[in-house]
Amino acid sequence: MKLSRKNGLRASAIGALVVSGALVLSACGSDDNSGNTDGGKKTAAASNIKCDGAKGQLLAAGSTAQKNAMDLWVKNFQAACDGVEVNYQAIGSGGGITKFNQGQVSFAGSDSALKDEEVAESQKICKGGKGVNLPMVGGPIAIGYKLNGVDNLVLDASTIAKIFDGKITKWNDAAIAKLNPTAKLPATTIQAFHRSDESGTTQNLGKYLSSAAAADWKYDPKSKAWPAPGGQAANGSSGVATGVKDTEGAIGYFELSYATASKISTVDIATGAAAPVKATTENASKAIAAAKVKGTGNDVALSLDYTTKAEGAYPIVLVTYEIACDKGNKAETLPTLKAFLNYTVSDEGQKVLSEAGYAPLPAEIAAKVRAIVPTLS
Image 1 (cartoon, rainbow, N blue to C red):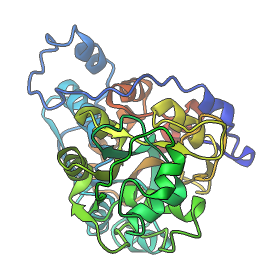
Image 2 (cartoon, helix red, strand yellow):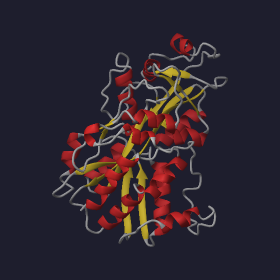
Image 3 (cartoon, rainbow, N blue to C red):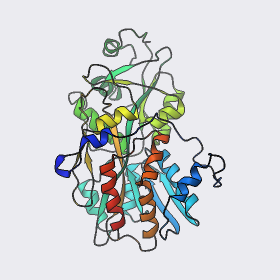
Image 4 (cartoon, rainbow, N blue to C red):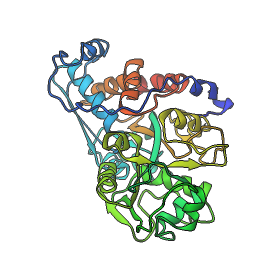
């Protein structure tokens, strides 16, 4: 997350991210809390988690982009803290923010920062305070596809915009062929999949297309709802990934972990750099290094640069926030909320992210969030 000097956060911090290959935890739903099936890793992780009075049930909802990370965090936290249940519903960022602003959940996960009107709405629930954006994890939005005989595919912002807007309908279209001169592109009809639910993933893709292909994508970049006509809708990132995996000629967008889990081919993006850029957590980190902090006080909202042409920088990225009240949290759930968020942003919580295909926060951003969480009241 490239951050302004004004905020004392340097891109070099991001560059120091230790990001490994995108691996998806395959057993994060296991009920075995003994730690015997993972070589003791979970026991070690649990021993470092501070429960600090956590008790009972903590309800949360939102982003499907962070579901794989959240599953892992919840598993480890519950293993460490007896009698605690964290229930996270992956219903999309829009749904999570709605539930948060209706007082139905203690925090929401969102792939985009709260809008001004959403902050205003949160003040009704956060008595004496407001909802704040706490970045917790970053990563790439992959453009996945299924096209027999085409193992490598390059697209740029313009072609992606025209595909999802229904302006390019065949895989052997001249614009795609120009970017892939050696590929044997079939005349197969393109089946474009998009999210049916409101989503920060959709919003981040829209911001990328609006920034990098302004002439071809005329829709509101702030919209969490899919704006273009046509295409096939599916619920959540998992639904879009399943649609792409099961449909010849399909293309869709979802977090890299879903592509990895389903063995879906992903598009390399031509950004204007010397070579097209692959969707990897490391390449996404290079693009996130172009971000700036736009939030003030306890709000750590970030502004991403979707038009970066830096070598090896993958431009379609998102940062997932946990949204919570800075003041006015419910007394009965506040200790559990703070303990859980303290864990997710801790060194221990951040280290496990690469196992699930995400990029951990840079050290200075993590430190800023760590200083804020204990002040929630």
